[in-house]
Image 1 (cartoon, protein in one colour):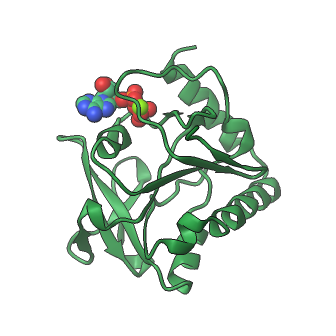
Image 2 (cartoon, rainbow, N blue to C red; image 1 turned 60 degrees about the vertical axis):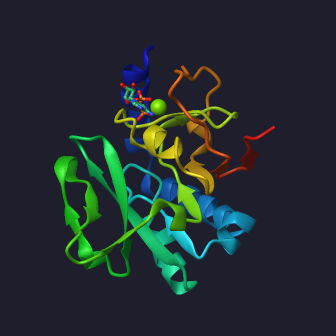
Image 3 (cartoon, rainbow, N blue to C red; image 1 turned 30 degrees about the vertical axis):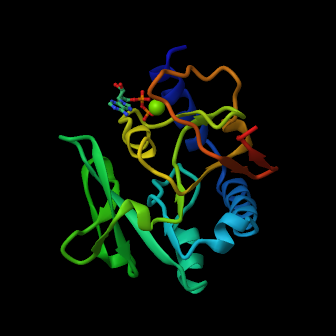
Length: 188
Ligand SMILES: Nc1ncnc2c1ncn2[C@@H]1O[C@H](COP(=O)(O)OP(=O)(O)O)[C@@H](O)[C@H]1O
Ligand SMILES: [Mg+2]
């Protein structure tokens, strides 16, 4: 299978999770994330707004707000393939863009420089234990990570971990992966 087929197969697997199992696994992952020193120390969290089949980040955003953290959400530019993060403190400041995704409305939110983001939660569909990932195919995070110096972590259901991930020269790994079963330290 190539990257594209692996993405489609994993999307189907994710969509097939029963709600109680999905909720429990998302809860386990969130609890493990909150226990990390990287989370504890981060005053500014950068995270995407999850689509229905992805690990729920809405609860993570709510918990970050309750914990007094600043939450920044990316806005992707499909022309330049770059993304910018905007500080958001209210879900209604999100707007629906292409493919039903939610992004910050730049009129209602404020731009945050990449070096102000302490912890970047990197989305993905498949991961290996070295922290390499298959994302959604835009390469946005590979581009962003090439200049990013903060902490990085990905969230994954344990079945999203595989060792046969094709890695290309532009692909960049995350530092840690938090699953419903464990925390993987990808830097050896
Ligand atoms: N740092 C970069 N500079 C330029 N192009 C990049 C960079 N990172 C990724 N790309 C391009 O983005 C596209 C998607 O990358 P890919 O790794 O397949 O997606 P994803 O990481 O979202 O799964 C590829 O065509 C790749 O060449
Ligand atoms: Mg990539």
